Length: 433
Image 1 (cartoon, one colour):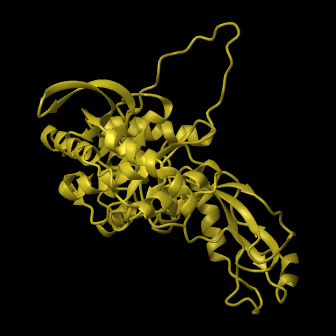
Image 2: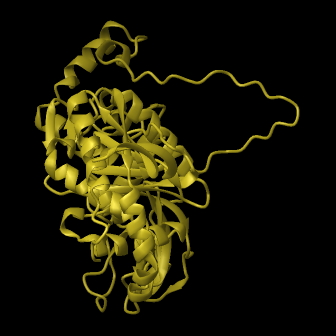
Image 3: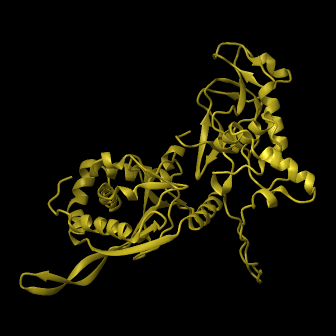
């Protein structure tokens, strides 16, 4: 998996136990964030045992299946717990410890706790003798206060400070919940009760739409959003593209859209205002070294995905055109890899694609700002000339910049979007590409 991906969900097994598997043949489908991927086998042999069920969340690095190579398939008839093959040619060795730990983790996960824990966290808790009551009190830094591997290890290294507190509370009042005394549980606000009417249809959200919904709610509850608007005259840019797009496509085999041009302007503005390219971790501001631009794209299903152009400041316009086209194509074909949507530091969304003139986008956490570019429309505008003001038909567009007001003030947020507009308005009509 790509960097920063810690876990994945098993969505579908493509092979059954006893099936023969070829090298690099897909064995299982997994989901990370919004991307579905197939996991190919790194060995040839027989699938002896699946270690995880469909729907299980698996930590990156964990074994997901046992494959018997030719030298060791005779062991498949015996009760096998975990198989480790040091090389492809060596016989299978049977080890009991890991499968027992996994079984215990599943038992813990079936408890009455309303909080989600990954199998990795549950396994660490079992090993350290941490019960569910104590585990529920550990502060989490993950999404929706989830406890990460780092959280539980930090708690253990700190001497398990909640252990005695949990025990004393249980003795004082056996009926009181520890969550109420030690730490208030996160409040989840439910929507209004919806009354069904004749002819209404119930449509269950798919997995991606649920993820998007959770991410959007989390973002607006995390960041106080402020939006600044700027209007830009992009007539020179439009005329330049019209003049060059046919010749460029014949020469490069690529279509040149406005998106890579917008991204180039954003990158230039970030270099001028680097404090837009940050994240907030508690009270610490993380100033990003790399400029990784996410480009929000609508899928044929209607869902949203944000592939990321890594190190966009190191690419010229031709390089941006090729990468934008490649990511957009693979997004439409559902062929993005998990790493393709990771590591973004700033996001651009083109609401003009749908004919909208402006929008108020929601920040893609943990970033602190997002830019929406509206539709380019011909409109009468006042131009200042040496002979006086005149009214002319110009290509105009709005740029909407939403930012986290905890760390980005109006002066910075407004100056940034104005600088992006300046770069677009100052486009050289004689530029070569």
